[in-house]
Length: 247
Image (cartoon, rainbow, N blue to C red; front, side, top):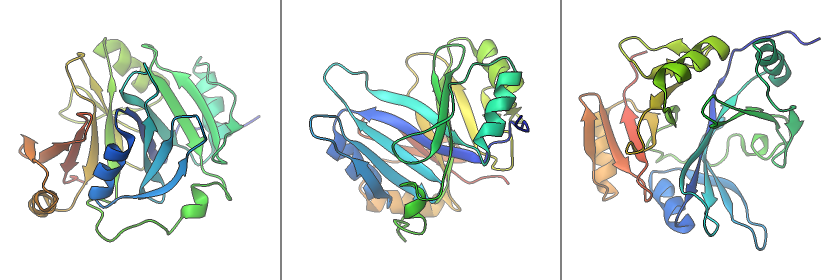
């Protein structure tokens, strides 16, 4: 019998299926991030693991013919995946069995009420991720922390109820659509309504002024979303946002 805890260590990765694999990888490398490793099996779409820090990645999936482009899923990290699994089962959820996958980490999945895939992982010693600790942390990374990601929501009320009551996420003050992960990370998700809304990921920075300078040196078009947020678009139109955390 496993102890039960819904605490999460943070966002582990956000995955996208991209139209032009090389172009998308070059975009994130242009932000100072480096590829930690890649799956490139003959005859299969490639997958690039772009490293943000030792515990966070952007996954880029090469599109196969006819596959849907854009946001695929968020993966959350747990320090004790079996405990998390037991906690979710006690909430009446039906996660898959926790298993070790190709990269060498434990992982289980489930879907939210609208069918959106959610992944949950625990990094293990000797995994491809763990073997890269301390590596690929370029000095010119525009950020060292992936603070948030959007996820689709056709019915905002139902989605908020699921993430809050079942997963234990907490409402972010003065925000109708943001929910903070249970635990100490202060990472968050944003529930986006409407097919016209572009997916977004949020990086924490210490200075928006310096971030603008860095982005413009990379010849990127910088736009302001709010007074304390700015963004650029990746090759598939995902909003890559930058904000100064309030904590």
